[in-house]
Image 1 (cartoon, rainbow, N blue to C red):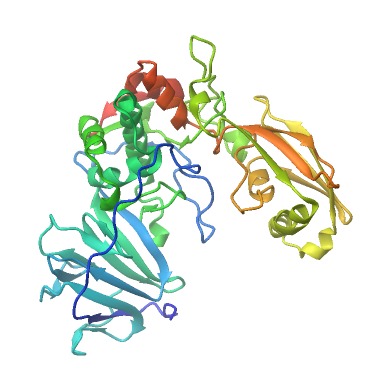
Image 2 (cartoon, rainbow, N blue to C red; image 1 turned 120 degrees about the vertical axis):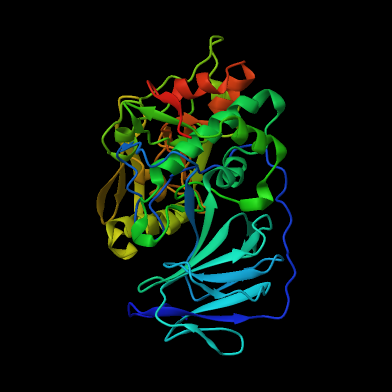
Amino acid sequence: MTGPGGSRGVLLASALLCWACAGTPPPERTPPPERTAPEAAAPDGTAPEAGAERPITETITSEPTVRVGIEIGVSSAVIMSTAGLRVLDGESGEVLEASGKEILRFEASEGAFLVESGGLIGDGRPRLLIEPLDPAIPIVLAGKPYHGAAELLVDPVRGLVVINRIGLEEYLLGVVPAEIGRRRPEEFDAVKAQAVAARTYAISSLGSRDSLGFDVFATVEDQAYGGVDLERAEIDRAVRETEGEILTYDGAVVLALYHSTCGGRTATRYEVWAEPDLPYLRSVRDRGSGGDDFCAISPRYTWRESWTPDEMNGLVRAELAGRLGVPPTSIGRILEIRVLSRTEEDRVDELEIAATGGRYVIRKNDIRFVLRPSEGRILGSTDFRVLHGRVDGDGVLVEGRGYGHGIGMCQWGAIGRARAGQDYRQILAAYYTGASLERLY
């Protein structure tokens, strides 16, 4: 069921008899994921407030806690730990339940917190903290183990929100492998660079989603986060060796954006999102002394995509209609696509889609969400050319370079630089122009 409409929404908790911790580590993965932080607006349409530089405050003198949104707007949540659980009031810290049960089930309701027997824990409490009795034992949320504790709240609009409260360094143990994949020893400095970038992004995001009750999503809306299942020794080492290190510019935490593959040149925020440029997020030529692009090793360095007439008038037309807020039938049948203009760095700035219902212009990164390949993922990048734009028997064909928004650190470029002997400081300096590496704690 959905969350209650009133501000006094509370949680109904019932204990189940037993549980088995399921799940095995994911298969070994070499390349970074094809979408990295942040690629799009959040599922509910909100966006983090991390777009502006945020000053380092004197209050951050030790490792902060990060609140990670694991499930948003669910009707119930099961929380487990073999160590046993205790429940506290999320505001006062008062212990409400300390029986040590290994599993608790929570539901959004009104009136009171109830335990298995139906007894009251308390009423009118909008936030709970659930901790394992042994902090060294993971807590299981949405079927996956995580370090730290769980926080539950009832949002009057969205329903039940499940949050992982975790120290920043432990959080990174589940972010870095999800973002850059399993790497060879000679690529270790790329892993360290990823750790610093991810830590910086997390620091800049603290408090940025307070309206939702947490700091970051556990997905590429912010940073991919896989929890305990993804942890490995080399990741632990990279995080440990860079502990507390972040990037700053003129005394402020930078917005450390990163992506999979730049295709030879990174992008600015304006040419991708029409947002104000930042001095440390410039367009950088990602080429080595030998003349090859560092990210040429990426499987997405170059690519081709094609669409049949039916595909153009199916998913692509539906996405265009969604962006325009009109029914697909009003667009008519798509006839042709063509590039109207390019950015200074040669990415597509405006794409025209001609149809029987009119001519429509899509700009910048929105192009990737409209011109989706048939399987539904977004287009690799805005660095592409239309080889055949008419929607005829041959279909539409485009050829492109790179994968992701293209701003900030190129992950495959970082890997190529590490292979070439650059250390993580050199890698970060290459992508975040003029930024300083600083130890915050």
